[in-house]
Amino acid sequence: MRQRIVECIEADGASRVADIHLCSIGPGVYAAEVSVVACSPCSVDDYEARMPQGLGLEHVTVETHECVRLPLEAESETGDT
Image (cartoon, rainbow, N blue to C red; front, side, top):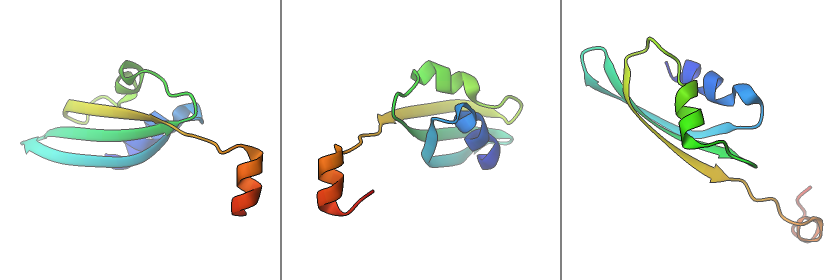
């Protein structure tokens, strides 16, 4: 289940699942909490619409985070490339 969720969220090639929590809340019923990082995140509704069907996901929470890239000068000072 975890892998299918990650594949669906990351299908655009620009979004990455940073964290995911799955919980059984009943027989065959699950809740998911997913943290997504992207330079230009989609809306929460868009990510929720990407969730795979037929897995028993009844309660889904998605939080988005915009990645921040350091300016080139700051990267060279820290040794990051």
